[in-house]
Length: 186
Image (cartoon, rainbow, N blue to C red):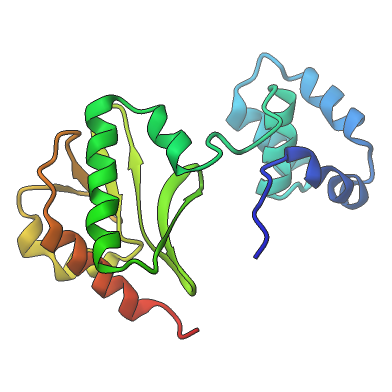
């Protein structure tokens, strides 16, 4: 699978073909809404012109000056932008998993670091303002480990841990093991 460049303009030929106007037209329409926030501009394109979310997002974000959806060129670049303690914890989390599963590739997807197997995403995380959200890509993995999670804040699909989290290697490996059972065969 080819890596996505993140270039928003790659959508422009399809947008022009599908919606019948050149990109300059759509950018000028958005210029009339420059006092509006992102959701209003997206709604304008989706509700009034039938844009898909992807196409609306590409045009709105381009109009706002964001020519690429990529914020990080690779996991190392992602880590460089984090607080020192947080970067250390994130590194330890991925190391704990990759020590047991060295075949997993650490990639950036959705602007977050993720571990990917040949047949799908296995584990990811997101750094928030005051915590790290662990994402095993599996509500089932969270359900199956609930007794071990009693001291954590659990969201629908994520587990919140502090920046200075003492890595619970066993928990991480159980989450990954459950996720592996859900992935399709190669």
